[in-house]
Amino acid sequence: MKDHFNDKKMQFDEQLPKEENVPNRPKCVLEAFEYIVEVAEDSKLSEEFMKKIELHLKYASRKLKLSSIQTVLLALFVDRSEDSSIRISEIASYTGCRTTKILRLSAEIDVLEKMHYVRASRSCMNSLTYRVPSDVLEALKKNQPYVYNVEPIADLQSFFDRFSELMTEKDNNEITYQTLLTQTNEHLAEIKTTYFMRTLERFQLEEEELLLFIFMAHLFVEHQDDRIGFRDIMNLYDNDKIPYWCKNDLRNRTSELFEYNLIENVNEDGMARSDCFKLTEYAKTDLLAELNLIVKAKAEHSLIKFDSFTEKRLIYSGSEQRQINELSSILSADRFKKVQSRLQNAGMRTGFCCLFYGSPGTGKTETVYQIARATGRHILRVDVNEIKSCWVGESEQNIKKLFDRYRTICKEMSHVPILLFNEADAILGVRMEGATRAVDKMENSIQNIILQEMETIEGIMIATTNLTNNLDKAFERRFLYKIHFNRPTVEARTQIWQSMLPSLKENDAHTLASQFDLSGGEIENIIRKYTVNTILSGNDDIDLSSIIEMCRNERISNSSRIKIGF
Image (cartoon, rainbow, N blue to C red; front, side, top):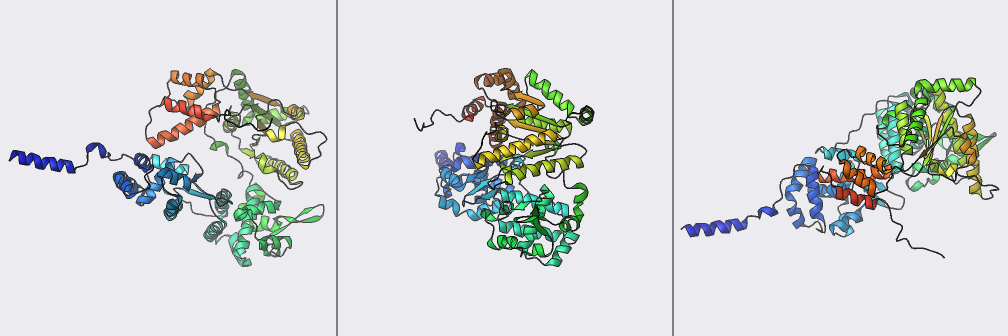
């Protein structure tokens, strides 16, 4: 009888899954994701795979209120969240599926996009990529589902703020022209009681013509743009292709926007430019009156606010620290006006032009941000590549408009902002003598305009550059402060490692600093990647070997580069 009972027990035990093969119940969503991603490799997303991850899948899908397959796809996206351009083919390759199988799941990915768990970028080359927003990662770190909240649009100002966000998404190819049109109409409905919207409704514009005007008004409201060319208008449409009706109506002045006195041609030397437009005074002063643009001129809106910069401890050499402390002290609100007054009384220029130069990653740009934060000054940041244009004369006009705009902002604000030319190598180099090529002439013209503006500027201009030996002497004379940022020493690198990763032991920090001659920017990049890995793994313990491996992979080796030529 006893033997019979033991035989039955053995049969029952054999039917139970072995304990070592039964995964523990996950404690958080990221832990569930980690297991799902691990098992998904070469799984072909088969039924066997779905059964194996059932426990973790149920936990995550219930927590996030997603279907099983949506949860699996999100886990795979989150595992690649460090990449801002995740391709479907990468997911397929990892899981061992054909790309067509993942494409068949496009409807599920669309749901993730609608819930803002992922953002899609659809480029002009029909290339579809995805990214996981940082807000989503923050929610998952807190073991919470991500909820996309949109503030209601209460007035005309909040409408243009929202439209500016939509244009950023459009510029990143994350929404199409049709989506922009639809969402703009929805937002306009929220401000239908405003004078702006009641007036536009009387004109009964076609919705595409209305969107074109909203876009032009956005350029004026956000950037004080009084020179809107076809190069600007291209950004409104998919693949940068302006529809025939739009270009034709604007060139021939048959657009209803002319008829209702909303836009006009730009005038140059008494001649109307058929390819350049701006809002009329009626549109600025009457239709947009609720924004009070004449009083405030929207100066602050396009600036990077000083309180948006996170306080960071930067490690400098003794000489660098003294110069930066001196400059920060002079640019403080109280002292700057006194210094300017003394200079003016002495018949000297009152503007402050400063140059931060040195190797990449040594903290030049971040130092500007920290000075701005410490002195309470906003920043008008200049992207040199956006200033330059392939159209003859337009680059020079862009740089003139930039300085005109900066002067206007300085007059309207009690605290003069910082005009930042970041990575200004392309405009600070030695000018070409006897230039014959159009490109060289344009470069020289831009440099000459900047040199003239530096003579009369009454605010604060800071340029950062990696140039060391190729700086034009004319620029060198006009920079009052020239601060050289050296690569950090071993001692400085040790401090940087410890300041950015406080849990790192001092001897480990010194080991990393001694073995790898990295800049502060490179160290920060490594720590960011390492932090992402700890978020996904849920393990906060320091893994020195993993950090060392990242240090080795930080720089792209040139040793395997194929030589071409003689």
